[in-house]
Length: 262
Image 1 (spheres, rainbow, N blue to C red):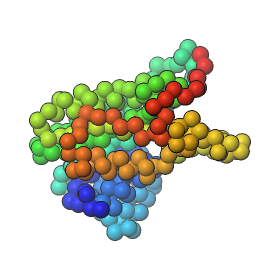
Image 2 (image 1 turned 90 degrees about the horizontal axis):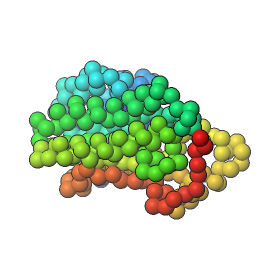
Image 3 (image 1 turned 45 degrees about the vertical axis):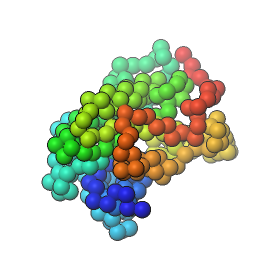
């Protein structure tokens, strides 16, 4: 399919995991992609993979929590790609599993910046260009952990819940502009951020238990989240905005057992 032919896309967190898989999927569907990440080597590797497959990609390192750097990312896309049709904000950080009485302000500030502030900056600066174009799709990445307790670190779950709210408020703020804002809520997916969980299970011979609390009885893969991202980037979702899409193997449809201790 070439649903994204001619589209100009920015993908943050593009050096690995969901960001890399989404950048590659966008390129496969015809888009030109500006891959953004904190680590130059990983970010350039994603761009090289896209180019090797016949796609068009640029690489750029940036701290997505810094407004000036996001402004520079969007400016480069406008200058070198000709505009911004899609912005996928997939960068983030997980926080720690400290109990509620052990939470620190420093952790919350870090996790808030990495997840909520980075999403706000994406909405603000991509949205400004998209309003001028009278079209565009902003895709934020939250987490199934934002919906209920005990699916992720306390600070992380709260920050991702803020991303959910931002999705809905931004979609309405852009009313009539042609700019859409939607959000993907992944479940347990094997990425650089979650690798310790998978490695620990494998070391203990418990790999078969990974994802066992989901109706699909398994963890997800980055390409499965990328499929939803491609849908939201394309005109197949032209009548969709302000929505939260859980891509989580069904775990958010139930109440799996689990508890983060005090």
